[in-house]
Length: 375
Image (cartoon, rainbow, N blue to C red; front, top):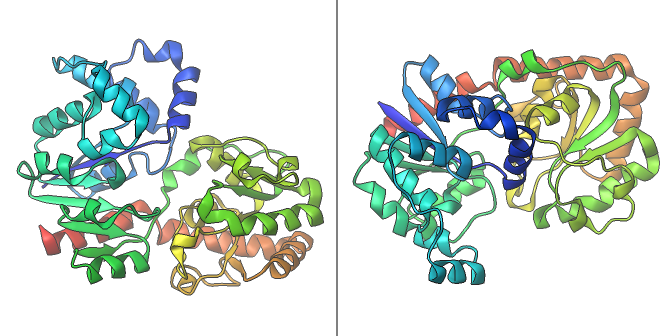
């Protein structure tokens, strides 16, 4: 069984990475550059393919929207591509930025088609299905045996998923939605990669309270909550993330520290006494996001917004803490800052649970069991 995983990275992270590694990148071939990129531990990095290989599966990962990396692959494999789209395509794409995604046009799609032809996977596992419309998927369906999408972000129109044999999600409400619409769907929780801990550095002074995340339309209702946290705890509260301008908050800018991705983010969590978490509106009543596992995996005490399925993931009050409203959040932060032994006990128990149960090797075992049902 050969599995090819197609991933995408935030454009801003890629820009920062290449600006920082500008000179080094010139001398690296495709595989060397991909390893350097994986070493930043952005998103799911190579955690899928690495752990699938541990289980005896032939697996590889492609970062579809990394144009520098993808062009290196094309050059090394003798693929002649036109880097400049024709004028009509540029105009259409400028009018509607989603045009290329819908049509599957442009050199990145051409390179990906050649990579699929070269690797000859049995299974194509797409982490960012919004990049690939049925028009593009039609071109690759005949070349593979099983086409899988994974999604827990806000959903595009349902027709984006009609070509897939299976849709996997860490959100039970999404699984139910797809099944109701006669699309095969299965539940798979998110995870943490324990190897990350080997690359983190402990600082002399820990951050008392942190939040690392994005500020988008699905997170609006938590802006007043975080404002109240800052009013109460002042310079003990630190925020990292992107989209802070979307909050239009004159309060949160006082604790904002900039953006943090990959290793930078993990080092912040590793050096945090308490990390706050909150879910987007698309999660409804279900706990699901990456921060649940990233924070606990790094050994920070997690305080997250209450969701109905949280006790299936962690023991509330023993491995993590929860809040249902602003007052409860502030009370619990105050309590655990004043009671270090109890804070530390919960943080250690949460980390143990994540490292032993919510790790990628376990998740890939679960994924393989799902695949066996459809392959």
